[in-house]
Image 1 (cartoon, rainbow, N blue to C red):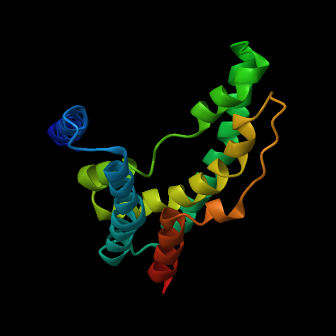
Image 2 (spheres, rainbow, N blue to C red):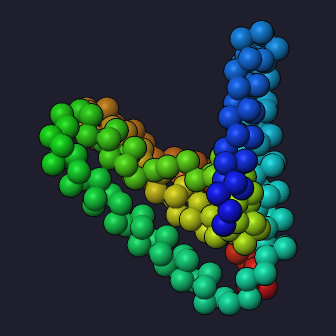
Amino acid sequence: MDIMVVINQMIQLFLIIGLGYFMQKKNILNDELNSKLNYIVISITTPAMIFSSVCSTTITDKSMVIYTLGVATAVYLLLPVISFILVKIMRIPLPQQGLYMFMTIFSNIGFMGFPIMKALFGNDAVFYTALFNILFNLEVFTLGVILINYGNDVKMKLNPKNLLSPGVISSVIAIFIYFL
């Protein structure tokens, strides 16, 4: 991978972020428009990118897909253990431990991760990222909800409907399409 590709992608992202900031300051963008744009990105653009990646993938080794799912499972089983150990070592106060564990476990692999992976590594990488995204969403909307309230008296109910995000649904469908 050429470092210039990475630098070019980062410059593009910062320019887009800067443009958004400028437009917000000039009141060109408002909360309603931002909400609609987020909906388009999360519900339409990202699933379309996932479907595009599976339709144009060059991955023929199905065992590699299963291996990737296994690695993703191992990562999301191991990260909570590591995060728990880290907050104990760092002596984070109990009411804040869940938040620190959440930050350690969960990165943003979906919203900005998919375009970056596509730009840097191509469609095959988007497909692999979608595999990780399934497990990410399952864990963020179950364990993540628990962690946010860890050490507090607030009890949150898990909402299974949250597991059915457009990214998860499109990722699961992409896996079925791939294996068919």
